[in-house]
Length: 93
Image 1: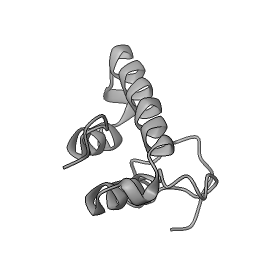
Image 2 (image 1 turned 180 degrees about the vertical axis):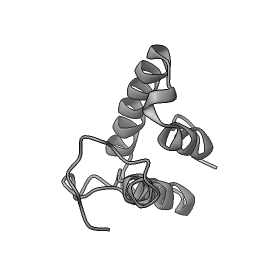
Image 3 (image 1 turned 90 degrees about the vertical axis):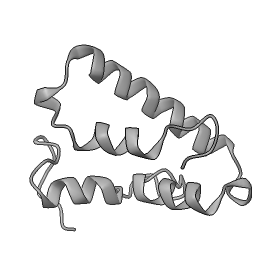
Image 4 (image 1 turned 135 degrees about the vertical axis):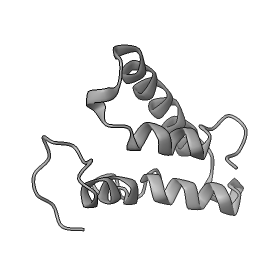
């Protein structure tokens, strides 16, 4: 369970794994907005104030904010099953 004010882990996973081709315009906009807000929440909340579950969730979604160039584990998993960004280059897991 995520902390108050943060995007629920199950909602985040659902948005990540649903192919973009199956999303409506509204879903694209909603995903982008909630992702930005959740990233902001991750950035402003000090690491020591996060629960263990929230730290793990942030690590899996790439929101640790200390390695902004690092691809998230979720993105790597999507690539592994063929659901990754079709515009990305061939990256190693």
